[in-house]
Amino acid sequence: MKKKGIVILNLASTENTKFGMGKEIEKNTFIKSIGRDKGVIHHFFTEEEARKVLSEFKIREFNRDIKYDTHWFILAEKVK
Image (cartoon, one colour):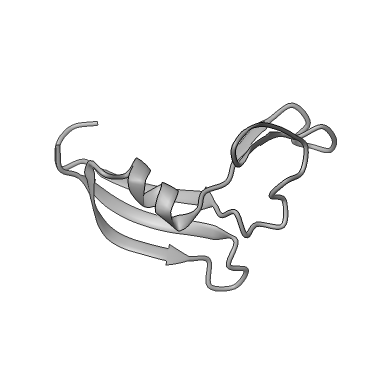
């Protein structure tokens, strides 16, 4: 991503009701074993981890899903 590029993210939170479903392949990362997402890898983020992953970005907005509190909504700008 170019410097000053904008990214909009919707990341699943570890508070998500689907957290822990399936086979854990690494911390907070699961492969679903049933349903529509069978075989799909899902990673769930703590606030600390999401901010760490975005360390090269200026975070403009960082909010939780207002209704369900299960996702992080992030607007950030690339600074490095």
